[in-house]
Length: 243
Image (tube, rainbow, N blue to C red; front, side):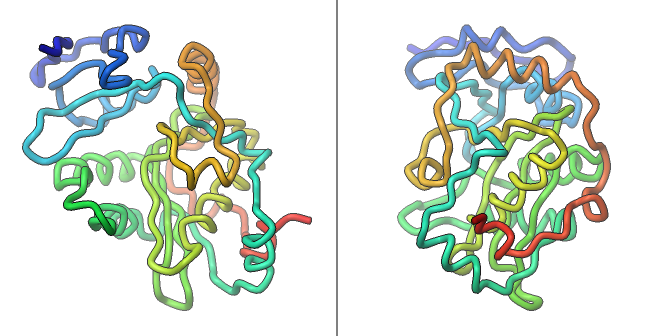
């Protein structure tokens, strides 16, 4: 039987140390609590994130290792590079946060459901309204074709999910986000867990001890609270192709 700490939804209490998370399933740390903005921000500041399905209790995770991007060292495969040079999509930030989340919540091919249920949607929209959760939108004309959202704490960005409605939509959003973060001297973008798709764009595994040390440092520094719409750099897909 799996035994993990159970958090109360009725009082503020610290998370157990991330290093005490289970090895199997990898990173499971605690259950229960709530999705208030205060608790979510506390979780991310300690390298912890919620991930659960409808009908389950809230589950909190801190896997080891942790997948991250170095924002100044994104990898753009040659085929993607050629395509970006001819792409005329537009890129923005924080203009359609809820719509991006809802698109990320849509069941993917081969998946029967989604982990982004109504409780998660409400919680992150509330966090967005407080200026701590952000989205990057990619549009073809007026049509939203891709996007990504996540949480910013200090100078650390924690990616949550991304989507594509047209081939390349999520890649453009991710590359644009990394370019903006690098320009602001935010060195890391958390990608949570490994996927082959992320690895092709430069994601690497960081031991949890190293990841937590980086989070402690970066989350404690001055960040950007509030909408990023005006501050986000004016980027176009050809600029993301590099040389």
